[in-house]
Length: 347
Ligand code: 9MR
Image 1: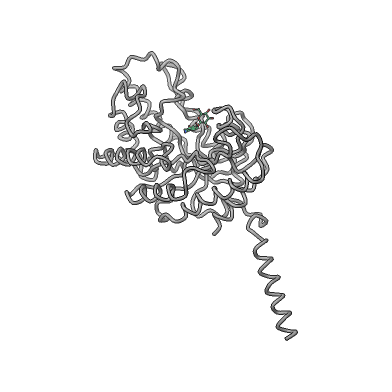
Image 2: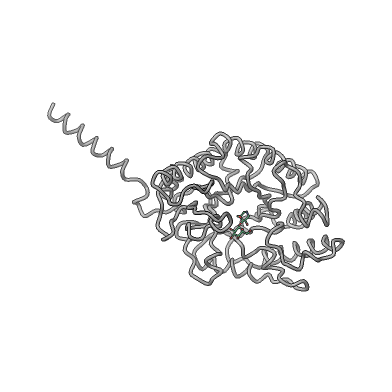
């Protein structure tokens, strides 16, 4: 009886040890355990010539701002593609493995001079820009470029095409032209259509899928959909996220959770990150990862968190409110969400 009691206590002690001993204390980080590439963005930091921080935790980097058109075509008469090779080299030196190029054609962060550009010459400009960008990607091979957001945010919330400068000057064909040029790349470069609110708004997701199907029917390559996933603690719900993931993969597209962050203060009512909010945020990060892990592995292009520390998040500046949507806090310390995220990736 006495022996059985000791054995029972030992088993109990061992199992308690196992539960408290989560992967978080093991020295392993996200990139060590993730079954797919796990990305971040930090060119807010590296662009200021500081040392990159994220490669200890993440193995893929997305270009946050540095490869936007305002930087690559700053003057009307010349392109400036050096940031492409610079980022690829810096990312490699910092210890990243993969680069995701974001974005080629977008309606924001355009060069100022483009507003007065003759509309009837826009198509030639777009063609030339895409060709030169494609060449620059091929030359910038310090680390492997795994994917490219060829067109970003072309859709309105009701699923119609956004009336951007590209739509106004060229029409829907601008999208086809951009994918046509990038389709010439070797298929190892995965071509994405990237947009926001795709889980929250099924009409917009359907429109994105229809757009990509249409592109494919025109003979160009579109490999995947980037769901940005700038989400919050309440929305979208777990079942909305699951439905969106399933729709995308059932239609035969790779899925990139491309700009994940989880606002804890979407309505601007909080002014501090309470432990209750941080725990809820951790749970929501886990929810996303668990759902993502359930899609077939060959559709898992990876999950990218949109920044490292709350200090560099785009949200407080853009919406003029307090928020803390990322995995590291203002002091670059890990938040509760980091450990939960790590454990969820390690399942
Ligand atoms: O994170 C980017 C931020 O630093 C910029 O100020 C902002 C300006 O447009 O763009 C942010 O990134 C956006 C991304 O390129 C496309 N999806 C939405 C992201 C957040 O606005």
